[in-house]
Amino acid sequence: MTSETQQTESVTTETETEPNDLRNLIEGARVVLWDFDGPVCRLFAGHSAERVARDLVDWLEGRGLHGLLDEPARESLDPHVVLRAVDRRHPGSDLVAELEERLTQEELKAAASARPTPYADPLVRTWTAVGARLAITTNNSPRVVKEYLTSRGLLPCFAPHLYGRTQELSYLKPHPHCVQRALNAMGAAPSTALMIGDTPSDFLAARAAGVPFLGYARNERKTKVLEEAGAEMIVGSLEPVLKAVREAGQA
Image (tube, rainbow, N blue to C red; front, side):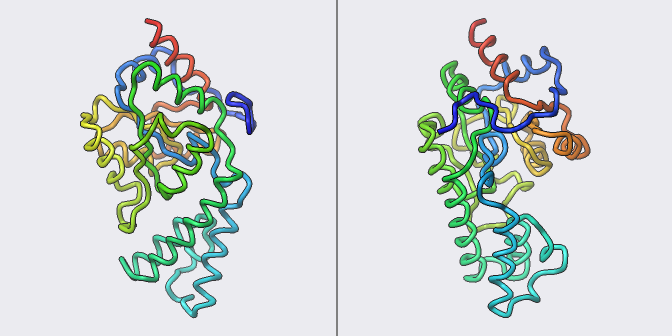
């Protein structure tokens, strides 16, 4: 088991957010919506997402369904791109359901070797302790989220608010569906919430739902793509967020 605050990766990006701006963002958040893979953990740290994507492509080709994927989808290193490409051709089909279940099984395997994002565990516990309500809003399977959070002892900080991938794949982020589900279930106004995410799709979903956004970027490449999407509040580590939450709780 990895120590909660152990640095499991090299964080090269300095915080792009001024301390006062971060404090103001945190103090306004009564509900915190977390993307899962990235801010909470690196799901595929020990189980390659690229290999999973290739396996899904190979599985389709083995069934004579090569034509369902265009070249960008076949060359994609993201299993969600493969899944969405098939769903666009055959939405709601048994084929899509079977492909989604194959991805879920791969995510469950990945959860066993997922690495906690540095400072995520204590941040989750601290935010809960000072009275915020937390939810997961993710494109991953909620079964996978539950498995991982249970292994870290964090499930009580989130349950029952785990909003992940459903059979309606058109609702994956950047569609705001999972964000809106969380807000509705928790009876929260968008302005009283905060979303933490590490991809443009997270930012776009939060913006569409009217929820303030805090970007987490563990390297310069992720910082750049978030900035290009329009995100303004970005941190390269969750450590300053943890510090700000602790200070706000003591105020």
